[in-house]
Length: 282
Ligand SMILES: NC(=O)c1ccc[n+]([C@@H]2O[C@H](COP(=O)([O-])OP(=O)(O)OC[C@H]3O[C@@H](n4cnc5c(N)ncnc54)[C@H](OP(=O)(O)O)[C@@H]3O)[C@@H](O)[C@H]2O)c1
Image (cartoon, rainbow, N blue to C red; front, side):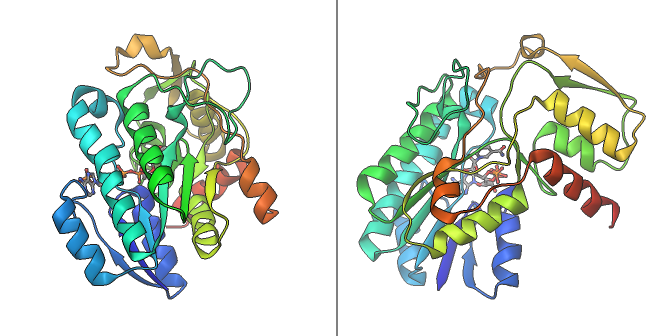
């Protein structure tokens, strides 16, 4: 099996590379420097030359406020780039796996969102990522759309995981207390993607660790496990004056994966505990 990764230098891309190397799978890691997914001609050339069986399409503008600030760039990478890859995947008969987001939902629900729940994004990140999904669903037969949420792990760019990783902890940090979602440990996500891509179970999957929380919950749990002195101060999202609106409540219910693979994702607390052990053992 030959696998081509886009966005291979991102947090998920790096973890996936480690896993594929361990599993002795042939793969071509690409990122912005080698393969800009907005350049259709070049992307077509590179993908046709390598002729992968599977395309893991992780490349994205994943920063929510950057997408709001530069919505043309967000559209061109998240939506048009995915359209191009969908066309190429279809042409060469490759499977394509696209990473989607909980931010395709508006957050007005009182319960976690299922794979079949109606998306209704409220910011440019969610809108452009949803368009990416839609192009892939319309064009490809052999697709996996993996919606995930709030990634944490050794290369995560998210604020609280970066605090957990930092060598010199500050005296205090602010953690958002009024947004709720699912958390996802990147190695757990990579393992699941590996299972999916080897299968023929195509469709939409919500892949997250079990349980719901805010970044405040996550920070307090990490503080307890690491016995930190840092003061964790709750802050409401509106106090941060962020450029993009955030949906209030977007946990994902992981039904398709559990049903088709007969597997349960572990809780985020258990995954966080493993993450912290992996940092301390270095
Ligand atoms: N992080 C989360 O909490 C989260 C939550 C839900 C879903 N997701 C989705 O999961 C996927 C992986 O997330 P991640 O956290 O690993 O993201 P990430 O760390 O931002 O990685 C994305 C990678 O794509 C690259 N990229 C940007 N524009 C590109 C282009 N035009 N052509 C090729 N590559 C380009 C980025 O390069 P630069 O760094 O140089 O820009 C980066 O290396 C993304 O699709 C994201 O939307 C992430």
